[in-house]
Image (tube, rainbow, N blue to C red):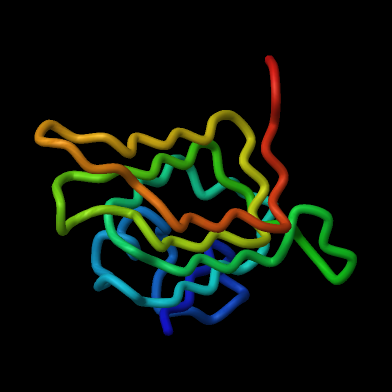
Length: 119
């Protein structure tokens, strides 16, 4: 399990969410602390479980990101099976599931998230 917080008052293994995602292995669980500061854009190209503090957290700050992108690179590398929960996505949520040579992304779970619609 990997912990992330961009709030210096909260102890964690990482303060930068994209760096933490790059350092993970497929199947890892990532806990992202709530914060008043956005974590920026993230791109996921392997199966991960990403838990945030929520988008309407009554106990503290929300987990805020700008964009989330899920990608499939080939038949064996991709975000299929990823679970994302408790994240407020300010701008866009992209899913790029097809790749040259065929295949699709599947079994993605998005729950208890807020996805901003429109501009």
